[in-house]
Length: 456
Image (cartoon, rainbow, N blue to C red; front, side):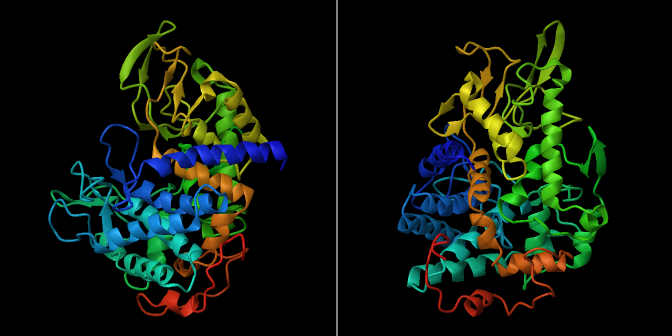
C-alpha cells in the first residue's frame, strides 16, 4: 500500500475514533447511539467501541491503560446491571435492551430486548478479552466477567420454540414476530449461539437460517443477495471469512468474503449507471446502506415526485433508494475491493460532499435534496456510532488484520464456526469441546503475558 494511502486511512481512523472518545459515559462505559441531544446509548455501538479501543491503542490514539479502564468499566456495568422482569431493566436472560439511558443504564424508549444488538455487544467483549490477555488482576477480571456475560445469554430461549432466532422480546408484548431468516447481518449471532456451552443452539438452527438465502445474478455478478451494504460488511468486521466455507458456500465454490467483494462491485456498478437519474452518482461516488436521510417527505425534483426517507435501510439494486449516499459505507468495503474503494475515498476527500466534521465524514448526504447550506444539498446533522465503528475496524483489518487475528483465538467463535459446518483456511479441523460454563478462558489463557497484538 502506498504511504499516501496509509496516511489517509490513518487520518480517517483517528477522526472516526473521535466519536468514541467523546460520546461515552465514563461512569458506566456506555456509548451514545448518535450525536443528537439526549440520544440514549446503543448496546451495538457500545460493542463496536470495545473493539475500537483496541485499534486506538495500536494506532497510538489512546493508551493501553485508558482502553482497559474504559472496557472494564463497561463490562463491570453489564455484569452488575439489572436483569429482573421489570420493564425498565437493563436486560433479561442474558440479552440487553437495544437502547439504554446514558446515565441510568436502563431501558430507554420502550425498546425491544435485542438479540442482534446483544450479539454485537458480546463480540466487542470477546475481542477485548482476547486482547487484554495479561496475568494482572484487572485483565484477569475482565476475561472472567466476559465469560460470565457470554455464557449467561439464553440463546435457546430467544428461539421461542422454533429453530431460528427471534429479533427480540418486549415485556409488554412478548417475542417480536420477526425472525433472523434470510441472508443478513445475523451470521455472527448464530455463531455465538452455536458456540455457547450453556445455552447452545443446534446445527439445525443454522441450517434453517441458510435455507432462506437468495442467490441472485446482478450486473453479471452472481452472489448471495442482500441490498444494504452494511449487511455485507458487519460480520467481516469481527471474523476473517477468507477461505472459510459452510455448506452453502461450498456448493457455490466461493466464500463470504468473495461474496461481499461481489456485492461491493454491484454497488459501484449501480451508481455508475446513475440509477433513476440521481446526481452525484458515479463509479467514484457510491455507498447505499442503512443510514440517516432527509425525509420522511415527498418533494418534486426535476418535474417528478420523489419520496425521501429518514433513517432507513436503503438497498441495491432493488431499493429502496432516494439518492442518499453514505461515504462511510463505501470505506467499510475496503478489505474486499481496495482497488475501487481507495479511489472512492480520495474522491470524497477532494469534493465538497466529503467535507468532514471532527468525527470524519458526515453520516450521509443527498445531492438531490436541496437545502440552505452553502453546498446546496442535504447532509446529516448527526454522527452515528454504527457508521464509525465498522469504518475503524474494517480499515484496520485491511491495514493489519488486527481484529481478525485476535478472533482466530476466540474459542466460542471457533466452536460456532465448526458447529455451523465451516471448514478451511485458519479454522482447526474437528469440533472442539468446551469446558463448563465460565472456564474455557482460564484453561486456554493461563500464563498470558499481556502483550499487545503488535508485540505478539
